[in-house]
Amino acid sequence: MNLVPTRQELKDDSLVTITIPACHDGVEDPDGHTQVLIRHTNTKYARLITEPIDPIPRTSTSMYRIGTTPDMGKGMFATRCLLIGDLITSERPLLIAPILINRSDALDNDKSTPVSLGPLFEDMLKKLFDRMSPTQQAAFNQLANSHVEDEIHPFTGKIRTNGMEVDLSDKNVDADTRADAKDSYLGICNDISRCNHSCAPNAYFIFDLKTFCFQLRAMQTIEPGDEITISYTPVADTHDERMKDMAPYSFQCQCSRCIDPEQSDRDFEQIMKHAQRLPGVMESWRSTATTTQKMAYDLHYGYVQLMEEKGLQSFSEYKSIVSALYIISVECGDENGARRWGSLLIDRIRAEIPVNREKLIPHYNHPDVFKAYSSWNCRQKKKEFTAYMETM
Image 1 (spheres, rainbow, N blue to C red):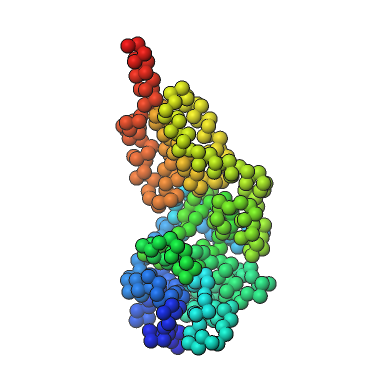
Image 2 (tube, rainbow, N blue to C red):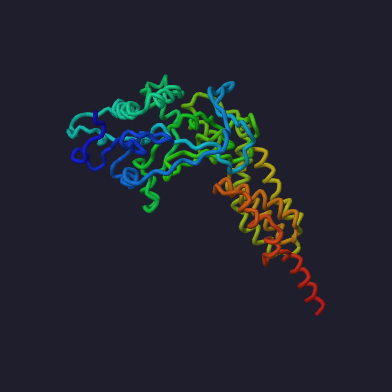
């Protein structure tokens, strides 16, 4: 049965069903296949059906297990210590489908015929399901559906419950065009979709088009036995905004930010204000010779402690404040401080860019490097120069 319309049958913006990577002569890809519902006008479509897909990256040993949580169903738990930036797992999704469809997505060319989008989308997802292997179908059926009572069709409910965003937009077009819902997709995985939510997550996922897989990486140090969590909502939102987004999932978040939401929102507001003032504060630090290192440390360190207490190290503001403390240490000639804050800075960079930690140490955390900076100990040099000029 041919589930994909021929090129002659496609309208300008039609959705088509493809298998990635394609099966050639019935040979299965060892990393698995994904069933994809995509617009044939999408700029990635031609690449996906013509270019080879690379093997997915793998860990040398299993980093996690799937287990039962007390109040959130299945979850993912670390089986060994995971450092910031470590690959936890990589997984090719079972399926990928658009977040939204339009009335024009009906294959019926008679536009005068009313179209009910719910059953139409459900039928499209059913076709993706029918193309899966029996093993993949069994895995899909085991995933939770938190929309059972919402009168949402079962396939649609599962993808809304377990879907993770996949960016298939064209990076070369303007942001407004990229934000169009037509380029927004959700992917469902067997294991990564088991990760539960936290407003202060310890892991994050990315989708790599080259290998066509999700990668799950540690955002913080995760100890063996700890649950591995991701965020289902924008983490910078207020508690009320996050809870509104979380309402369809039918559970109450008990993370560090939700225990006392009013105080948490106030703390986060102060952190954001401090981060916004940071450029001006650092400029003042450089121009005011009377400000001591302790005074500068005291101004910033409390925010670092607060963010670590709330598990907010993944926020860009944390990296900005740590960077400020690193700069202060370097400019004061404080080797221990430069090592301490340089080490944290390396961790944050690794969380953003997967790279071996040892490769970053020579750039941020080695005395031969930071002592060679022109700014090394410049505060003391400036004081000595000022004192010298005063004797003239």
